[in-house]
Length: 157
Image (cartoon, rainbow, N blue to C red):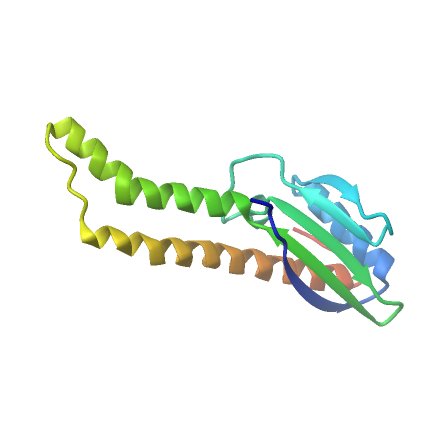
């Protein structure tokens, strides 16, 4: 299953080169690795190399990221795309464990037939909530990073 980017566009002030450079330094110092540049040179791609993530460090929740800054003086439009493959598979794994794995394991340990509760289906909305809550937190963090990159002081975090 190919990972598709979820794009958000932000507007800030400054020059596109300085905003792109400040965000690139910020992403690299946050643990991301540069994975390539588009053939036109307008889009820079990053990835987070570790499988571990924490919602307290929003950059760790991103599997892949694309960065494009366009504009000449004044308003700069920054288009950031992100994939959340790690979060998606982690959530699916936890949902499957709660719904199927835990009842099966308890049934085997007790020596009886697994007891699948109909209330187990409540993990599905909880999983969606978790995925979209983390995704929202990441995009709020990226918006704040873009706003700081457009300021004269740069990104500090």
